[in-house]
Image 1 (cartoon, rainbow, N blue to C red):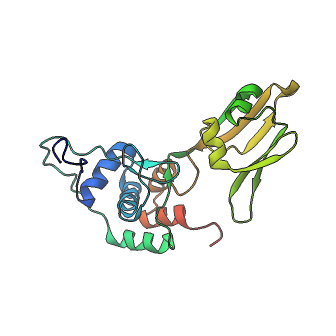
Image 2 (cartoon, helix red, strand yellow; image 1 turned 90 degrees about the horizontal axis):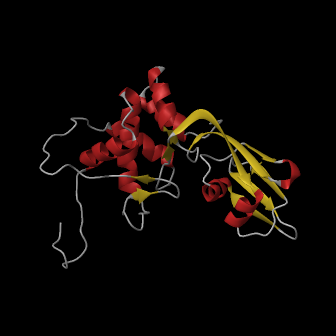
Length: 223
């Protein structure tokens, strides 16, 4: 660490300690093969990720950061865990040129949110929203189309749900009676892409290996 006034503070660590720290902050409940899969993903993203949060400098994608809080002062213990290099090579292949492989809490709990018309219009800085439609492209990309009195706008579903602070991209959108607002329904939490922490643990408990969990998360449907 630099002294105050001598430049920015820099925290340096090794890959395995970094993985220990991120798992402690992000995925304390993961065990067995689910933990081994996430550990490999953390180290892979740590080596390839390019985007950093403007304030914390944590490595991020557009929706989530890998939080590393560092080690406790004078701490000498390590978890003893080591990352399987075969899993890192698998992620190289699954990434197919990407520099970040996403993960999220995921889960299968359904949620419902109602948002008043005035609040929703305020979030999008529009005087009136006549209709909202959810669309899926052939590539699998989810979009939301907003219809205004004289125009329309198409947003990535992830941008839409972040604007409204929804737990995940809604799979059902309905107008409330009398123009009072809108009801959104969905499943789980996060962007719904990549490795779901909750799904990974469920797969591990069902007997999946770390390799199978990573393939489940990052192999496109139908491959």
